[in-house]
Length: 351
Image 1 (cartoon, rainbow, N blue to C red):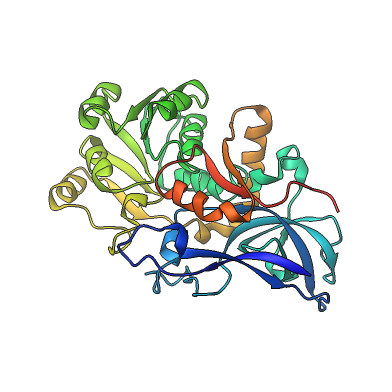
Image 2: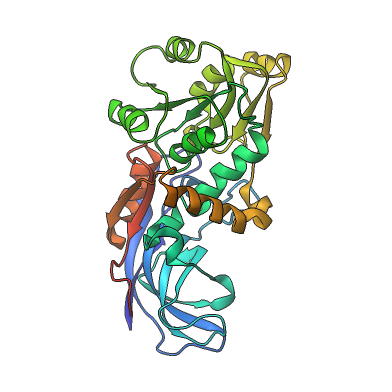
């Protein structure tokens, strides 16, 4: 059987921007036989995420993220449907998910690397398991629970950078649901600002490409900032931190503005901002959602409940087919998406 896959064609360099030529689509032959413990699955949706930029380097800079290898199929979060199974836990027609799904139209996988998902949790929207009812949702929820220190009724203000992205768009909503009285988002277009305030319930939004961000934040957060959900790092984060209150908290979710630079993670703060952080006792601790796997099941149920109640709105930026994966990746890295960026490989959800 001939299938299509995406391989890493070249590396952009530690300080380079990813380009389409870094990826290559090729055809390979998939075996007609599967061994005991394996399943053959057809890929439905693939996830495109900022952390993947690190995987394009020869050294990811971390011990828990593996580098992609040249001329080898790349992988990430994915969902598919089982077409044939020789694993006791899966049968034909099951929907399965993995965080290490090859970017390939069909694939034979070790059943132990997969988890079954229940379409009823997402009212049949299978792709949501890669977004709000999946890793981005868990990252936002557990990050806020663990590092946000939100107390309902205490009039806390939360600021979210990268607020129209996969985690940011969820974090602002979850901040409100957990008790923040005011949530302000930072993003890069007027369209995104309007989306945050009119669709997702943010109280206000700042377009960092238009006007003075510090002045806008002072106006929109008159009582200062108590919780900062940081997706971007860099100058924007420095500006937010300078307006944070005593004993406030930074949820260090991502630093996308720094991923094309050869700097450690999390990147060190400029001396003046670091001084503010220390003087005001602002917490800024690395957050890794994979350290909280024991909370995933309850977290998914909570996210699903909020979604079904209409309290958590889901936005996906979807493109079709494997050939558009590199373009989707570039778009995500430059803020072209609203919500979670995914690629639809097959829309047929039955076998």
